[in-house]
Structures are given as structure tokens and as C-alpha cells.
Image 1 (cartoon, rainbow, N blue to C red):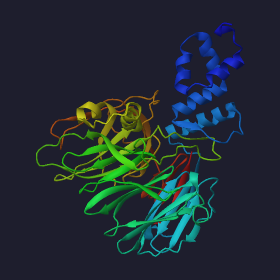
Image 2 (image 1 turned 90 degrees about the vertical axis):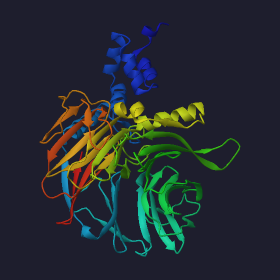
Image 3 (image 1 turned 180 degrees about the vertical axis):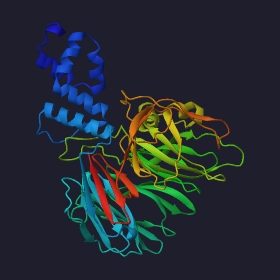
Image 4 (image 1 turned 120 degrees about the vertical axis):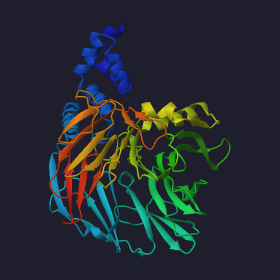
Length: 482
């Protein structure tokens, strides 16, 4: 039987086994294939999910046609910052807020006192209850927390005793010891009061950057087994790190010109011990005499290797943007560096594929100009928040959304920053001169969308379906749903 003689229904089933980008390539093989793919809601849904940086969810209650329509409406809403609803929720005074985090439709806030508050953003209304809990934690002990609603996981970092720190592994819903945690309290030595640059979760791994022995050292634990996986040597400068998977991370080091280390946590053949391998160093641009990188912090969406439960779709781990906030000494110059996940993971996948043991030292010119976007930071104080390939930033009385999806087409091109409402596609290079030794040119394309907002929003948070703005004067949250 010729391929052309296969019934359409069977041919579509065969195509559905392919990756979405391969289906797109098949569409260019012949007119018949193209028409078949275009006419199939299931194949179009798979393609549109991929273009939007999403993976199928666990909710299969709707038809492919309905899901495709909802996905298209969602795409248009995000492209134009045209939220479908705006809900204001009163909360406790935010001037006593110590730590907050938005993940997968759940906002969690730790106040200065013992109160830990959670607010579910799903099906939100103005009378939505803000659940306040007393976790029974001494304020003097509390350091930080993080959540993963997909695993019903709450991790609390404590300075539990002199020279000792602990991680409490709890269920997010009832705050009891998590049922999958073999050791719900992980205790380890800490010479000084732990200073954290970040604490993160990636599947079965917890990572935290701890100040010990006069170094900022990334440390990693398996929260299910309770075992420490690795403790890195770290740096004397205040470095920052991000887990890019449960077995790989990047570390930004603000020494000299600055650089980014790419590392994997790997069990050698025949050994149970997990070792850290530094597989590549990506150099940042050379600085002119008298300048140095004094501070670097990193932001990205959380790792979610599996789809969120009861959702039509979830963000794909491979479709994430990383935001590095860079502060240079002497002239107080600050910049934002945007790098896509595929850049970092290219080195990780090569290591996993070829088992290369030789460390790669990559100069800026070999990776940065084509694979990043370096922008001067504006005057607004908040650094912004990141989810997937989007970054939300303050812009005075407006919010600004950057989208680094590779499928950003159909908009007018512009090389200038957007000052008023509207959107534009930025493909022309950005060139920055000071404080660098040579002009720095970066070209990673992005879309910028700006929309004015009512009220005084001090902080903007972002997840898959929402932007949350906080007003510390009026003590309220504004939740923009898409």
C-alpha cells in the first residue's frame, strides 16, 4: 500500500506520534499532507501547544476543537496583555511581609509574625478567602521557604540551632510532614546564620545557596530520601544559582568580568555517590579598566517535569527564559541579561550524550551576541518576575511584558524600547558601550507589550495564567487572569 492510500484517520494517528516540530516539517512535504494536517484539530492543537511553549495537561474532558479555540484565545490575550478578568483581594498589611512566592496558581506569603498565608488563584472572586495558617515556627529561626503545588510540597528553611540548619518537608495543603518524605526534617551543620540567595525545587531535588566557611555554596538534597546529594565548593563572592533540571544547574559568579558556570550532578558508573561536574564556563563581556561585576542574581520559572494536575496544558520545562540582574561597580551601572534555556541545555545535552569530561571555557563572543539580549535596566525598582518564556516588568504606571518565544511573528519590528501602550517585535541588535571594554551587541529576538494599569502596583508576579500586582499602600492584591 502506498502512503497516499492510507485512510486519513490512520494517517493522522501516525502523525500524532511525532513531535509537533516534526509534524510542521511534514506539512511542507506535499499539498495533500499540508491539507490533512491543517484540517485536523488534534494535530493543530499539538502544533499550537508547541508554538506557545506548552505541553498537554491531564484534563482531557474537552474536544481538540474546544481546546484549540481556548488556546488561541489565551495566546491573543497574552500577546496584547488583554486579561480576561481583574480581581482585587484585600490582604494583611504587606509591610510585614517577609517572603512571598507565586507558583502554579498558588500565592504563598510568610509574614514577620507566625502567619503563613496561601491564596488559590483558580476561580478567584473578590470574596476569595486568604487562608492564614500558624506553622508554629519561631520567627528568629525562619529563613526562607518555597512551594511546588504540583507535588503538594512546602519546603521551609530554618536556622534550627547554633551551628545547625534544617529543611522541613511538608504538605502544602495541610502542613503535615509530606507523605513521600522519608525524613521530613533534614538537618545539617551551618557555621553561621545561613544567608540564602535562593532556595528551589526541581522534581525530587531541593537546592539552596548557603553562606558557610566564608563561601556561598550551592547545596542539594533529595527531599524524598532525605540524603544530601552534593555540596559545591562555592565562591567568596555572593554568587547565585538556578536549577535547570533535577540534575543540572547554572551558577552566576560576580568576580572580575563575571561568568556563568554550567554544572551537572552525576553518579559515576558503579558508584552511589553523586558528584558535581562543572562542564562549561560561559564568560560575560570584558569590562573596561576600573570596572567589575559586583552583584549577579538570577530568575526563572520553576522546574515542572510533569504536567500540572487538572489543567488543559502546562508550561514546558524546555521553554524557559533566564533573567540575570547584573550590577557593575564604580558607575552603578545595572543591566538585565536574558538567556534562553536551550542555550544552557545545549551544553548539558552534549555532556549527557558524549560523556565529555573536558571543561569548556567559552568566551563571550562565541555564545553571547547571538544567544542573549542585554538591556540597560530602567529606573523602576522592582526586578520583575519570570515564568516560561515571559518576563513581567514594572514601567511606571504600566506593566511591560517581554516574550522570548521563538514563535514571535506578525508584529511591526522595532529597535527602540516601547514607551507607550502597544506591542512591538525587537529583532534589531541592542548595543551597549559602557562599562564594557568594547561595544556589546546582543540579538535574541523578543516581543514587548505595554499596558497601563490602575493603582499603585509595587510588585508584579507571574505564573502560567496570571499576573499578580501588590499594592503595599492599600494592602491589596490585583489578580489579572488570562
